[in-house]
Image (cartoon, rainbow, N blue to C red; front, side):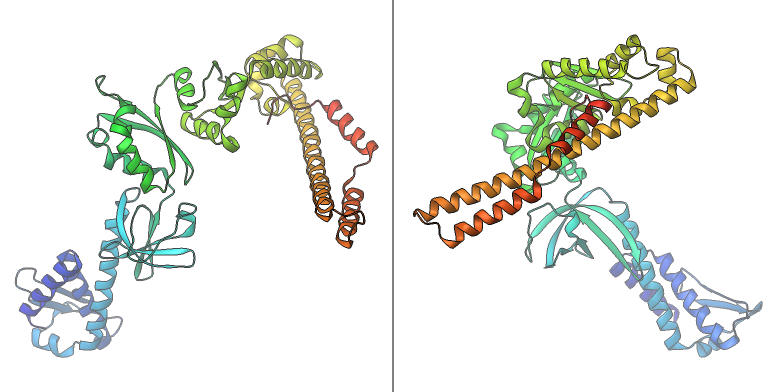
Length: 460
């Protein structure tokens, strides 16, 4: 290969593949060494260098300079070509890997090439990425030539290729969309402090403004909600709550639980838990559908939040004081202090730091161990009783469903003589009742065991 040809090849690869010239020169040098090794043997000491300015090749074999003509004549052209191609592919792979690894967590836009089974293949221009089912928003479907936006979740080398995995379920996607749609966030006037997300359903975004003249919530919503509407549409209708951030948990927790109205927030520092008191009519709103509102608020604040009414709290406090005081070695005064710190169940007491309990009650290490072991035992009994109660409830639901089915079958017949189908339904009902009925003695034993161990004061 002539010097000017080498320079021309290096420049072409640099421009077409976006690979640094030095990497290309190194690949050609390595190819030449590999080719000469086949001529001189594996033990030969061969060094090859290419002048970066004029492309001239020079080399040595066991310290003796190799003549340029001899060099050209001894090189196996096919071997050199294969090595160069391999090195260029590796360099191209490394360049793509480094380029996209720097963008992990950032949003990219691509076009769907195909959607096969559970995975979508997305073109990012110079390379392809995949969007697996596990990283797709539930309920979304993709079509060829459709443009989508996603964040880069993971980049890794896989053989001679680079595997780029996209995601649409990570909180980073919400953050990048806010940065794109809201100039105040891009300019740094408004800052996103925390994001809690359940993709496809609901997200909570906590924001704060560094300029008192800029309303952080209003700026994110936009005029007539146009800014937040664009983000919601990109996320397939996912509901987004914008929360005003505060470093004071007494302020942040009520903000995070909006639209529910909060009466009081009690912070239990030792447990990292916040007990939030609400009115009866606000209870279901604060908890949210299937506990979604309180769950997202807990993630946003970084605290375990428990919602209850004042009456429920008073009942739990009374049960907890009575239950703790019944443990041998735990004085009533100490039990009241524990409840005051937010310990409302045997399960809470079983995870207390021994040093804290020793300091609180002036107890020995042996006494603390005995108290914690007893709390663990009672918590296990209470959990077993609760599981049994749930099982009985499921069985009762099955019986109710069978009764309802029989009633519907009977009404449909509308005849004095029941048809064979009605008789079959009645027989099925009798089978269900006989199989699922729990003897009274068994129920009494389970309830007495729960009473003996004490029910867990804290509501699940």
